[in-house]
Length: 80
Image (cartoon, rainbow, N blue to C red; front, side):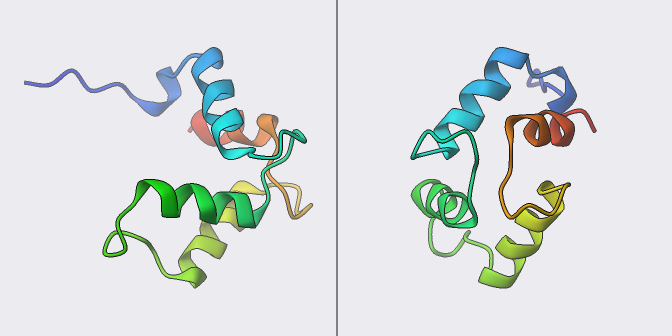
């Protein structure tokens, strides 16, 4: 049986690496456009969620409603 790691067990270093992979312009914030580009890069067209679902996922991660996702918000998501 495969060893499955719970998302809350991801190290802070790995969370930062994940964040930096999405933050393509390296400004310390992930925009909706960066989020979409990341998903498009790693998912096939058949796996890619609708624009509406991508927007809803982004909004759920953007806890403060700023229109961007910060590293702190990534940490909060992965603490669930």
